[in-house]
Image (tube, rainbow, N blue to C red; front, top):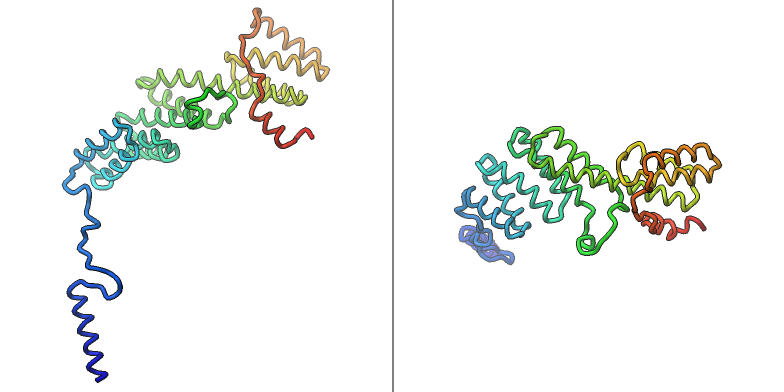
Length: 279
């Protein structure tokens, strides 16, 4: 009897195995759940659909399609364009790290591609706009009070573009952005110098103002840096140095400094007060 029961179990198990059934809680799997949604697509169709998604500003869909295109046709006619376009799609989808990685990858794989200058330009754009969040797009904010780290990266990106591809069509725009970036970085330093003056840290204020004059010549921050140097030196009792700063100021700005409001409360000052650093 026991032998007959064992034989029966073996026969049932073998029958299920051959027929495709599952003993433990499953139904028959025919693979329909895993059908390829891109069956019959060639690389041209992938490119066409991904481009359409970009134009419709459906960047997530564009990313998905470009990734599929590159995975299925890595050596096809549209592979290089897909690698470049996916960097742009990541950028527009507010994924700066992925966008930079994609741009760097394109530059590494295709250093002689006729569109590689755009990859360098795109890196600059990514860092240029990296600190602009949702609120900044709809409300006026002072970009000169932000940490200049990404601004410096953007400046270096645009500078590399100009050095490598001086005849690129993206150079004129890159130059204009570099001027804006340099002015913003100088104004950030001015905010810091003014912050030190308000805290009566005169040595630090003068050092920062001197840095502005040396590193950011011909920016709107320079005359205000000279004013800080005059006030800082006088507060330190260094009247000769204060007189030198005043002489340079009057020589270069006989009509006074252009109006720039940099004495509003900065984020640094608010953070200092919030932490109770003066208490």
